[in-house]
Length: 80
Image (tube, rainbow, N blue to C red; front, top):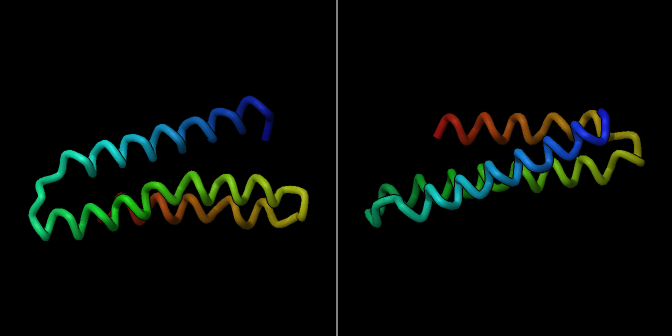
């Protein structure tokens, strides 16, 4: 991946996490909404963290394998 693509992906995962946080803050305060919202908050914000971890592990040769983890986590956010 080029440096430009790496920066783009990093920026997009950060924007995604910020949107998830903003969405969570406007959810109704009902028990149901908060339970589902917390799960979306955890899975949605972990995408960027998982990406950064995979990026940092690039030197160890397991980068390609770990890079798929944020994709799976992001799909979990869409299911919620």
